[in-house]
Image (cartoon, rainbow, N blue to C red):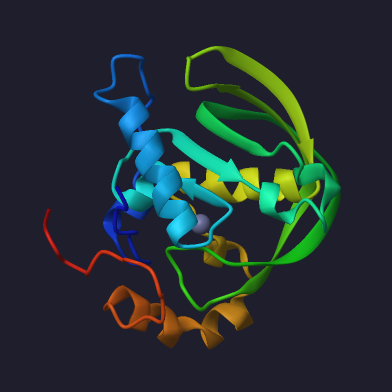
Length: 187
Ligand code: ZN
């Protein structure tokens, strides 16, 4: 089921998220909803808070970009209770976007490599290094679990320039061609 994506301004996007346990009700259903929702919005990553679930879970699928980014070949994965253990490497800027902030793209500087501990959908533990674009996607989605959005990380002058656009989005005036939750709409 495609779920509406929470827009910039929704308080859930700013909340600290809770650890996920194996008895979470219908976790496979939630994960499948997240994939469906992400694909419908042509995204490469989606964090649970973006559909209103304040838990430590995000999904990625960068396999569609394999041609430009060979490192994305097998980059389809569910990340549960992830912890960034290390971040290293040269800082690089990339023009990021976010499904919760449609129509806004800005350069964000991040380190190029991350060591991540996480559990998969069977709650098995993994520890792995990611670099380049896959590290970038993980850092962006991980930030969502901490209540951080990429617009928090751009330079203050750019932030000023997009302020009114962010206000529009938080009022429900956006250009997304996918389903978004209306502001102040209670479920
Ligand atoms: Zn995002």
